[in-house]
Length: 414
Image (cartoon, rainbow, N blue to C red; front, side, top):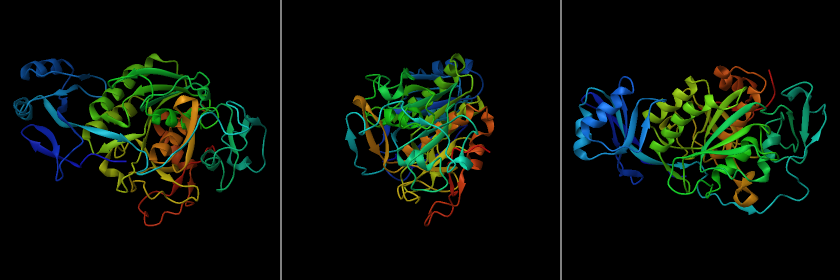
């Protein structure tokens, strides 16, 4: 995965204006900016008119502001405008696939598998690690990543889970879209909003893969959750302003949906540090929604990236099948938990499946686990903390990443 060049926040006049620092930022959207104003939304129109700005997005839920193209003269005026809190260059961000990853692709399903078919029962081997004591289901021949999050040790092939499995919850998937007609979703995936130019469908496949990890019948953590597609990337790339618009949309839209147990947001993409992306993600959390985000694949401290650096986000690093910290994963104290990210099988466009790697694949495990726990009425405000408490401690081989929490997610219940 590639990230945009590191941005520095420079105080200029009364506003904070973000500019490319050090390196030439080839991923900056030419002439585009995101603007956050002080005060209420009535100030937005006033400021826009004062500089004769054109707008692509208006924000009034995560913060008051807008995004659009600005000339050099308009930027100069905004730098010294008393109602401006911050201005950032509108950069491109990318999906968190592992760099250089090759993928296997199959049309259909592995031999012997059917969507939505699991065997039910109780296993004494798994009993200490259940998320509930009575209504359990056992998925035999489960992919390694699902088996790993319901067992104390690696090497198992059975995923044991409570049948509630996200019932009554909704997960907003901010990604490349979802192939909602894929049989693996059993009709539980719905398209809501497209913030990029072009088709509403998932032409990249990334969002379908991510959504499959969250809640598909064969490859999902929370097999009964409802999945909402909010498209923010196309061919693996999107604009910061579109991601903020999607977060703004979630805060507006979620109260209108039938999600009695709670709402989760998954963000398997990102870029270098952005104050405004973090502000938007924090507002989603404060609205009462659990946010899981990929740490990133740059082999750098996650605190340099957004939304991974936002403290209210449950930021996820990746491990491989041998319980080793993934060499591509970002690291450091900004990472809250670890989840399977290497060689993860999930759904793909065209009704198929695919194996992929990256923190993009780790984050939806935590989003799915969040929905899973919400179906047991775990307090939303404490959900990331709850996930860290139920995690297995000290089982991952961290190598040099000793500053990263050694907490591998597990679906047991305290």
